[in-house]
Each structure stands twice: as structure tokens, then as C-alpha cells.
Amino acid sequence: MTGTGQPESYCRIAFLKRQFSKCKRGKGIVMRKKDGFTLIELLVVIAIIAVLMAILMPALNRVKEQGQRATCLSNLKQLTLAWIMYADENDDKLVNGDTGEYSIHQNETPWVLKDWQSGMTVRDKEMAIRNGALWSYTKDLKLYKCPTVNKIVRGGNMEDILRTYSVSDSMNCKNWPDMNANMIKKRLDIKNPAYRIVFLDDGGTITSALGGWTVYVTEERWWDPPPVRHGDGTNFSFADGHSDYHKWKDPRTIEFGKRVPPTAFSENQPGNEDLRWAALAVWGDDAK
Image (cartoon, rainbow, N blue to C red; front, side):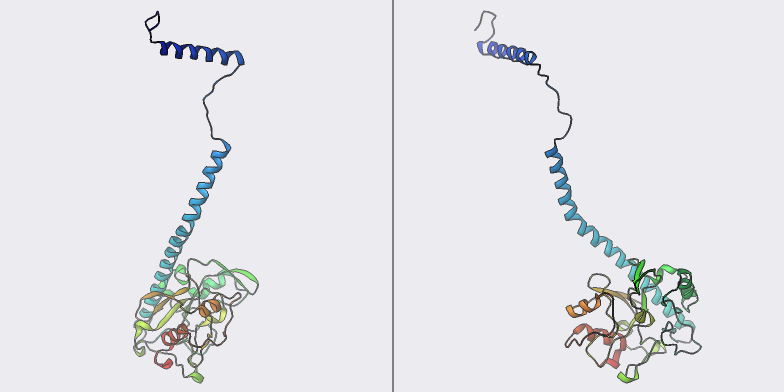
């Protein structure tokens, strides 16, 4: 104990504090509270944010794609319901599926007029849709296009596109007698309608497919390119009124479908199960 009644250790601590305080004042040292981040701390925070973005962005992109795919499927379904309503009101006759590529259907207004020629204005393309036979059943331009597409490069030029959906050649579009592939004129003549393609999301990248989409029956190769639109597949609608996503399985299908610019007539692809599925879905019994 000291003469003041305080423990000796307490007095030593108090003495050291007084000495340290004097030392700071003598050297002009001013203690300040830290009010910001250091450069290293900021870099660490930025690095953490970058890592989180790298983890989250693919997931966010997948969510966005799934939403666009769902909208596209809804568009195709509504178009197909319009296609069914047209048949119901026209003695079961299918709407003309040719958009001016073949011009073989006399006195039959196409579901969409020729809207794929080069040099057409946006107004020209819009009127081609509005003057089509299905417009009175749809009356919404958004139903004719997948939401993932706004502009495309065609013929070396960037242009607006209002339609990405095509009709299967078998659905009152075009016969191909040389391979015994026959189009259907009446809805009741469609066998297994849940498995027969009506519309598909072609992407609007090749003008011949926008006229009508077809596949070979007698050869193991692609005629029109297989659309690779949502992931490694595309959306289709079927004659019973439902729409569905189909994923291609053979890498050769995906490689040909992704070629830029898109072209028709692939190399032979023996044993490609995608070709078999597409031929049956387009031509039905004619492909057996």
C-alpha cells in the first residue's frame, strides 16, 4: 500500500498514463479516430463483390432465359389456338401455311403475308402480319415473335424483325412428292395431333424457313437449319393446341443450327436421332 491508501500497482499505472500523455504532447502527436476505409480494405470489398457477381450472374441469366422461354411458349400456344379457331370456323380447313415462298394455294389467304423480303420497312412487315388470315384471331403483334429477338443481321444488314415463328411445311404449306411428304389440308386428317408440329420458334434468321420449315424424309441430313434458340433447343407448338420446349440431343444438330450465317442443307448425319424426331413430328406417317 502507498501513503494515499491506493494499491501500489494502481499508482504505477496512473504514473505511466501521465508520462505517456506528456510524451504525446511534447512530440506534437494528436490521436484521431479513424473515419474511413484503407485502400486495402476497399480492394477486399471490391474483390468480394466481384466474386459474388460471378456466382450470381449465371443464375440471374438462367432466370431471365426461363422467363423469356415461358413467354415464347405462351405466344406459340396462343397462335395455335388461333390456328384451331380458324379451322373451326372454316369447315375444318387449315389456314394457308405458306407466306409467299411457294405461292401454290390459290384463293387462300396466308396466315401471314410475305414479310421476309429484304428492303421491307417495319411498317411493311407489320401490315403483312395484320393482313394475314390469323390476325382477326390474335390482334397482337407480340404473339408473332419471341421476346429474345428484336433485330437480326440479314444479308449483311441489321434490321428489325416482327416475326420469328414459322409453320411446318406439312400443315397446308408445301407438298414434297419426290420424298412422299404430303401436306395436310384438314384438321381432322391429322393423326396423333399431340405429336405433330404446327408452329416453331425459328428465330427469323433464314428467310426460307420463315416461308415454311421442313425436314427430309428420305435423307439423314437437315434441310432447313434446326433452330437453336433457347439453350440447345427451341420451342414448338402442336396440333392439339399445346406448346413445349424440345432440346436437341445430337451435337451435330446443335453445331449446324448455330452456324453463322445460317444455311440450309447440312452434311449427312447418319444415326442422328434429332432428324428422326423432327421428320416424324413434321410429316407423321409419311416419315415411317
